[in-house]
Length: 210
Image (tube, rainbow, N blue to C red):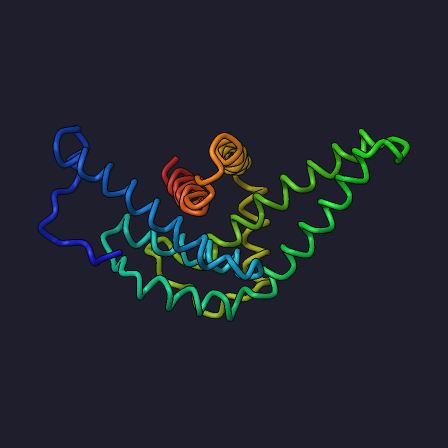
């Protein structure tokens, strides 16, 4: 990432060269953030902090702020310090739900179909809340919110998920679409984080403007 040149053309809202430039620039930024999120998530427990730092970076890009890679990694460290318990909880919950899903679909559990549906619904809700919580780590300008903890981020994420059901549906749709993309072409997993970050930022912009 590099600090955006103030002389670079911006979108005029009427299409044309500047609009095309901005679209291409945004696509490149999302792809690069996806790479950063993927690398930052290698420890697994740092998945949520990586998403939080990615959301902050893309928000800064939208408002023309600092998008240097060094800034991303500084905020990755800060997000890891405040959100690592949530990252650990997400890994534990994912393993638990995976075990429950395998048991429910194995055919040895009476009523396994119902259990599988419940597990899938719970996983969907958990994913949306976690994505919303990652977005709560920074403000609309991409600056870290002071004194954010796992509890406060989860609380904010839960509130947003319940208040903006349409946006939560859009987030879930984005998750399903990225899953399909990876299923079709596994190497695309490297940009999944960027696509999810874009979904979080887009849903928040929609919520404020609708």
